[in-house]
Image 1: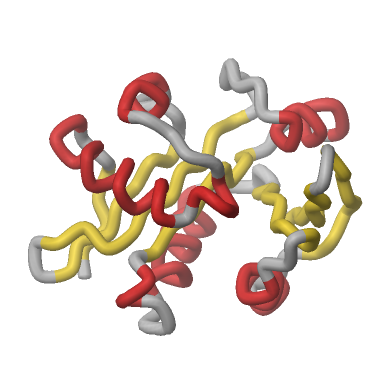
Image 2: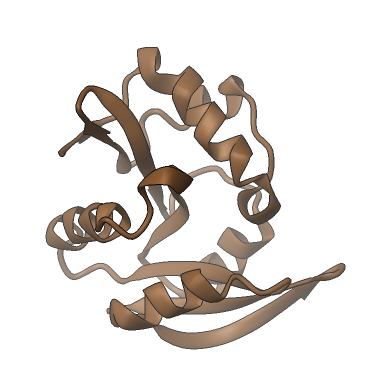
Length: 154
């Protein structure tokens, strides 16, 4: 498996992977991903020349209007916000998410990583994944019929 920076030519596959998981991360079009090509971390994983996952993490200076991102921006001076990590459903359980996180963690320096995970509706697999990787709960946020748990890794 190879991790590399996302390029414009892979965005159709990124959109496809993202939108399969729209229940958790919201449906997005290619323009959304084009807008964030220059964020600090926008990495894909390839396995046998097939894109099987990706991770996007932006810093506190990114112009982003997500209420979850803004929650962290109000509380942290510097951070990398993990906006989305998606692994193709057929490839889950093979360490791809962990590989993406290890790459991010090894390159973040002393800047905290923050993320949120849906707890209503429950995304238990993601809760387990984040806690297994050392993230600690730092709050919750409710918006409409969704509730998310806010996590931080120092």
